[in-house]
Length: 535
Image 1: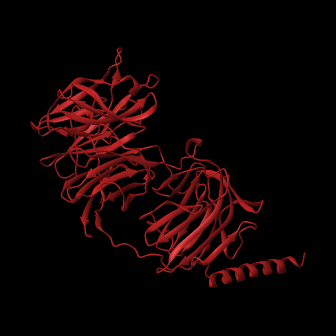
Image 2: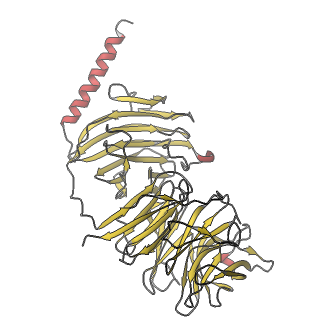
Image 3: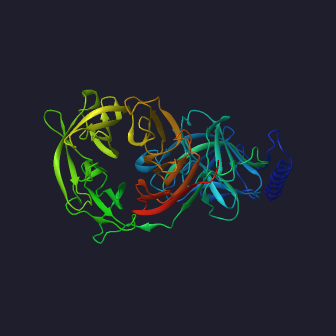
């Protein structure tokens, strides 16, 4: 028994000596590894500190960390010395086990305290990392890659340069990660951490190795091409304290903004309301008669005669299979309105029999040169989710199917020219978005392209300066920008990482200025000024 302290001191000395030796040499990629953990032994002081009470054991040359507590995290953290002039490289070889998260599933939303299987790195100024589930590799905020992480061990690499953080899996880049290393650091002391940093959720994983190193930048950072300025936020409140979520913004011109908001529990046929603003979104007033009712319009558009047309989100199926909803016609100032029923005619393949709601009108609507109206919706087709374009040529009395976008949930459509369109749509919570294009006015659509950004309720806006903006949310409330009509998304900002529904909406209220409204944790807004500064 007397020899145990000496043995422990010898082990600690060997660990420190190994760490120092690693820090002095660079590998063939020019990486100087500063911290290196081998899963064949338990993490030990002075290099590693336990956070919470990790249930950690070594099994088959890998460290198994089981987070079985819903009250505290279970992870290990090591300090390191950051060099602002260097790239940071973090590698971990991991096999994901099971997780138990929101409602017993795999979704780590709506809590924002962390993830049950994660790799977190801080340079003392910013922090971010990887959140792993059996079906996804993701950052903690808004980038996602859908894959099987649980069937075998995989090697994950983060390359951090400035505010960018690319993600590699088994030697292949899966996430470009422009502006992904963004979150202000919790502490000025740099660290690397692996395991569970979630209090509410549980899970387990096996870690063969974890290491962090630095190297000279492998390429020069491109010059910024946009100057993005975000105002201080303000809250959108009501005297009667009605809870409002999931905003949908519409610019009617002539200084008038309208906004449709959900006022229920996120359920079929929940009530909506319409709000009106004449001060660029600073204050909002409910429109009497269109507040807290199922028939309230969601998409709204100004017509050629100056009146405003709106279409209800909800509709109900008549005995003959025709869907019956409501159209609202406002006067030019949205001070008075009339409401009447409309019919929606869909082909049989666009309708399912086993859902109470077949179709909802969603975010975007357009007045056509011929006097007609095109609106975007989505619903449950026989083959699953589908987005639809519908057209009315009789002032919103009848809506007929024009085209479909397979598997498109919450489709957001931007018109790029009289014949070109792009749609960004949702796949699911904490899954990447998908994008498609049309070059024939929406009749046909390209093969889908999966983005790295996600997860719910995108809104798109082609600005007057040619910049395409896309707001989106969950688990954070974010916005991204494209300079090539959506082919690449090269600038990103996080408006807030607080939890709510994390639905958002954007409209350009003056040249170069967006109004961004979101609902996390309550209904709030900011101005975003977007200026082109590069070539």
